[in-house]
Amino acid sequence: MKAIVVTDQAAGTAGMKLAERPDPQAAINDVIVQVHASGFVGTELGWPSTWSDRLGRDRTPTIPGHELAGVVTALGYGTTGLSIGQRVFGLTDWYRDGTLSEYVAIESRNLAPLPGDVDFTVAASLPISGLTAWQGLLVHGRLRAGQRVIAHGAAGAVGSMVTQLAREFGGYVIGTGRPADRQSALDFGANEFVDLDHDKLEDVGGVDLVFDLIGGDIGKRSASLVRGGGTLVSIVGPPEARPADGTAIDFVVESDRAQLNEIVQRVRDGRLRTNIGTVAPLDDAVAAFNPTQRRPGKTIIRVRP
Ligand SMILES: NC(=O)c1ccc[n+]([C@@H]2O[C@H](COP(=O)([O-])OP(=O)(O)OC[C@H]3O[C@@H](n4cnc5c(N)ncnc54)[C@H](OP(=O)(O)O)[C@@H]3O)[C@@H](O)[C@H]2O)c1
View 1 (tube, helix red, strand yellow):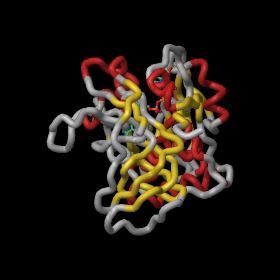
View 2 (tube, protein in one colour):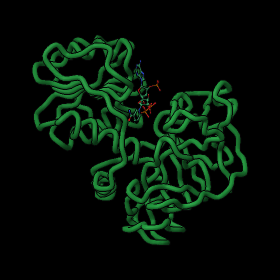
View 3 (cartoon, rainbow, N blue to C red):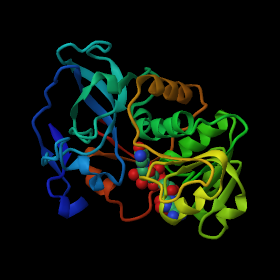
């Protein structure tokens, strides 16, 4: 099969190439999925799991990309709940070969059924952004109606989902980002917008929940805005500062079939809008992973036309 591979950590994206790889084999509880569309996160080549297995051993050549939408073509021993020919979408294990490829082996529990009226490209944009927003707001952040929420990077892949879900669950959303992202953040439902290049973040006053996907100085300054009993949720590593009278938590997104069902249902009924910026074929995936200019929104690789 055709796949994007990386072999040389020092080379970074310059070492990415389109190559021929053996078709994956289904282990116990796995399914094989013919990938129609794939999503990735631009920071993947910096993750240890891209280069080594759970015991720290070199696992290159590695296929990046962890989001997929496609069709089940084979079932591993003992696999239940899915059938051959079924449309699915989901999030693959960080330590296994990923989805920038024509086929992938994935544990069935990491997948959810994909309704027939949701396009593969749309579905591939949902697992990481949707699940991260869902888990950060509702599981770790324990968002309640009426709370004030800072959604950093509100026009980005994760931030646009955070903004929409926080509004749906009754939050008052203060979106942040680049000057050019103001209208996009407001269109995704932010009640107000802070241009981090020109406005003073501290002027927004106290909040109950910060969803931080920027970190650094912005993360530190955000911690001081969390009021008593509130939470700073970080998806960019352990927070460097903690709220004086609140909680700080960081997490890495996990696949969850029930949550994937909730997310795709919202896309179907119009409560959630995807934020797809660029769609490219697998042959152009290396360039898409390594853009020469800013590409707002999520990039999706359409593996099968
Ligand atoms: N822990 C997890 O489970 C998890 C899951 C998903 C993502 N992540 C991480 O979360 C981060 C965001 O991911 P994403 O896919 O949402 O990326 P994205 O689509 O690029 O969105 C990030 C947004 O924040 C903006 N931004 C970043 N730094 C900023 C700054 N200093 N001032 C103003 N705006 C700023 C970006 O603008 P520019 O493009 O102009 O910088 C962009 O609009 C990445 O570091 C990713 O690795 C973690």
